[in-house]
Length: 175
Image (cartoon, rainbow, N blue to C red):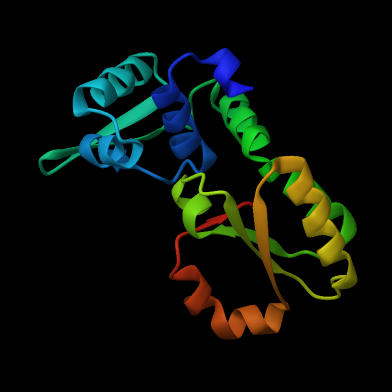
């Protein structure tokens, strides 16, 4: 879907990384190394997206960090396209509609950092959740999005007792 809309593979990777989780920020050389492109090619993409207002730039020391501009009028649409591409919207729909009382949902590790690694780690916190539905949920969602999903479910008390362990990992609270 994104390949037809955007011709630059680097731009697609940037959109995925920075719009999947708007709290993620990265600097030029870090992105160039991660995407295996030259710093000049990365700078061209970053400059284009920044000049259009899609990215914020923030200088810290000798580095310039870039992140998604969540106040841009097109941010919700771009973020929605990225989530649909990855399949997070489908995962959330399945979770919220089928497993009961959900208090919070976190995306952990790679996807929280904006990296499409193919494995999505999901932490679900809630009481009275339907654990029997989770296996079925994973299978259906994995087929739909073509990615592996690892789900951890904790009740509210378990999460309160161990939240520091989970929240030390890169995380993104989506619900």
